[in-house]
Image 1 (cartoon, rainbow, N blue to C red):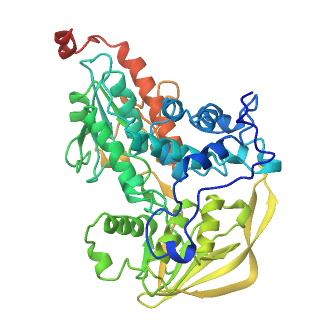
Image 2: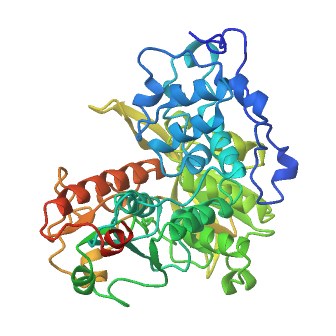
Image 3: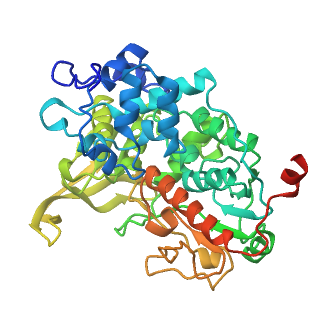
Length: 483
């Protein structure tokens, strides 16, 4: 075993330096400073190089984590970059926004006694270093194919599939209804977690690798599914899940009750230098307001921390379960608490109160009941326990469902299940439409970015298998002429 490894017994866990809460709460810059190389090597060297790497097993992408930790510890950074990029199309994104405490780090063998290796921070460091050194370049496939693929959705799943298919030589066009590529990476995740330049440079690399993008293009409005199927040999639906879940309580229609995505998109557009009328009017501006966010996932954490940075008078998060059962990252909860967010655990809304606009949220206390067959405890209200929390703005962060794609696309033959997600054959990843595949949140339901990337990669492999069996598969004419 290399002498630089197995240092967990005498080297304590350490993250990159975090900017003080009273400073970072007033801007949207990322909260962690970069790792210096020596500290990254030191932390990577804490890895035990265990025989069964549970960090890798519990990563949706099955990243070769022990391998690139060892390479970082040995200061073999370009090799570490190659290994990290072999299984992940956006390692620097996952290093920033994955809930490592529930995935790789949460399953690190040494975590029980000595605290986990800081896998996410090292992953981020590897790719930031690689970009700075100019190692991340556009790519050229070894052979060009005449077959083309259309991808609906420029989020992480669609971008991952586009890259994998282009590397195999297909002519790839990505369609997205928004004006920038990236999906939730651009409009749903705040800059203090993921700076938009990180996403933009990934998009530009794909453009430079001859992947075509048709932005501001909505399927069903600007182009039909039938036209896409006529234009391309195969189509991938990777639209994600954007439909906000409703809160079914009285008063939900009052003024200043805001869906989370609307609030976050507004803030991110302003961060991109745009004017947003609803912010200028004060509707989506939390400044001076008592803000209550309802929900317990990472979107709720993005909302509470954004409201803090907009100088809200107070920010409160209501979640119906306790802290241990919160679906969002525990690190994000800690960051939010440091920045001044108040959490009301085991608290659920009974009604939103007010006249024309909201003045408060009436909530009742909850308790966790008996465990079900899965071991999960269902929350139940405590009788006579209501309280009213003053509020000038209520943000609903209850998760997302699939939009009604058969209606939006004007394609009733596209089959969906009772949850509205697209039905696929899970072996071929093909939908009910021949040659049309689907992947990501639109199939599995709202989930993590890392799962979207995994699904996009799997879809690309399935589409390549299917396209390879089709008549007419041959090298592109330009490739033949170049030989």
